Length: 192
Image 1 (cartoon, rainbow, N blue to C red):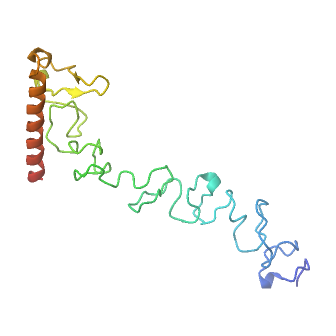
Image 2 (cartoon, rainbow, N blue to C red; image 1 turned 90 degrees about the vertical axis):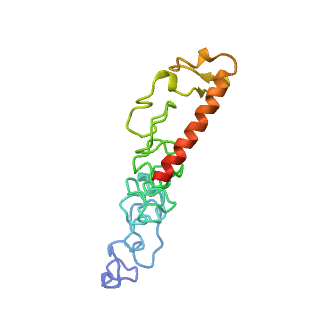
């Protein structure tokens, strides 16, 4: 029987045979919290509706409510999508500096190809081997000065011998240190 007179009975798929406005032929009224068209979805197409049935609506942080694999806290996959809705796609899965290690592999600075787990420690003020300590085994005199970017001059903090080298000595020492770093880096890549 069609109890509400809307032309559909429960046998015909009427999900609320007490309300004539609710039936399989009705249009969805957005925002009313009712499954007006009896398709199993409430208010589909609105930010409060979970359109892809992944347990999260747009209002709950689902950044792609058309894809059930994308929702807050989803596992991040290497697919070009922000699977976990944190604003970053494929974070930790792509080797940005192409040193053979991703953040998930333990690369503590994936913007610097000289830094990765197991790298030789270089006296360059960076934690090259990602063990939590920079320049272990280096004397202050061995630490290469780095350009701080604010003055155009090398920052010699922790480099006792750098300032004492006189005019031009710092530049020559810097070039020599750079050549040594490149040679060590190439040797480390060949060994890997």
